[in-house]
Length: 309
Image (tube, rainbow, N blue to C red; front, side, top):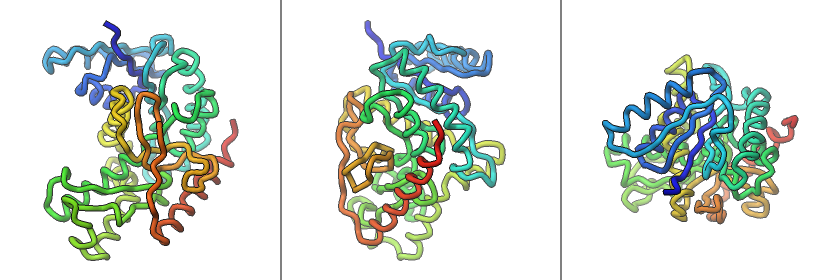
């Protein structure tokens, strides 16, 4: 049997939890890679020993080198420094550029047909780095951001209204940071526009909390950043790609003419299938949303301009 392989680079909280979610969905066998000796091996062994209890047939490998990743179908890159209180995602730029560029080169040489899913921050810039250094086509390099941002907003709306998260739809575009753009016209509760369910000031408060969702968790944890929701979002993308599901999900995807972005990775709705990003879905933006989106793109452009590869 030709089993699919998911390699996860970085076996810290985000990477190890990605491995757990991927196992739950039985997407394929999992390879965990980290520079810390013994850590990926130990987590892989622990996860493997949970499989008889869960009843999932998933094999795990832990490694400190990239050879075990050869022939991967999907590679999830979580490696990099995590945010600490008081740090913005942008503060991580220089060090994580160094880390992500090295990772992208290593995995591209061993899995030339893989799709890369980047989780490292600052997200939009790191996807760009992975694309440039891997040599892959833009369609096979994508970033996890919009699913997480959208999930946070859906969570907050559901809690505010006392409804199931399954009945709340939302969409958040733009860069993964304080400039992200929640789209009010695409927020609904069981198909009813959110603006009919909640006053404007409460909606804006939830939008603001969403923009600062990562920082809120960093402030509470004090010694780390979010990992359950980010890893769940990354694995949802992997599932869509491995299953050729053609799901339209908000991702950091390469846009040139689309939305007038001009050749950068930024959060937009994208159709994910076996080829990675198969289509950028353009939605109509209200005038204020267009201004906010363009401002967000400008911030991503400035970040990318400061990258030294």
